[in-house]
Image (cartoon, rainbow, N blue to C red; front, side, top):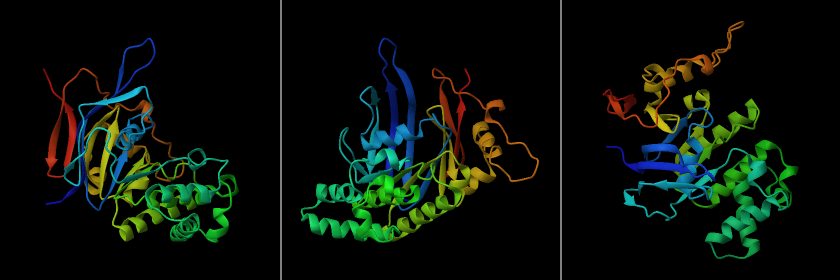
Length: 295
């Protein structure tokens, strides 16, 4: 039986806007993340992927609140504000890094937050971590500012920062969005290698099915604040059941000359209704999809 790193039950998230009723963003999500795997969470922008992950890290905006959630981390109950040994890589390193601080400052701050050591020792550890993620001349990079590095190097710095926090769970939120195709492949290969070497559990958040195809053992598809289908990568790609999953797969560019791209906007994906009752239809022990209960 597969052991889970993370179990989430009944996670609901609301946003409260001034002079307006609360709006539900995430609807009663239940999710498991197997230990030692790379799990993909796929969906369009606005489907709720990132805000679900930010709720795990307790970095939601002040006007956003969660309710009814139960968390288990390594089979241990987690309190409402308790920090779990997880780290997050954000999709835009240029906004995640302080442009007025050197790369060394960012890394040393992470190290000294959890370990007692001199600044010099922390800088040596930071340089070693930069080398591990494939950054050349790491001592020089420590003295540079974010704008002096390329997009791919900045993303490697973000990965180094995350690893310095010594996580058991690594959340990569659209880690290749702002990068060109060649650098995307390098960053994904780096995450895969580090996952094996550090024995990490990884959640890869993306809107791109092409990214998860070669990276993930299992996939969860999100739509309008709900997980609408989940299964192994093979089950999702070769036996999709929910209409939204099917339409996402149709939207993957095939590269065929003269063939028009499939538009999700013109598709017949079932929209979910906030007041409707949904249940999962089980296809196999690892594969299920959301259906609306009749009556």
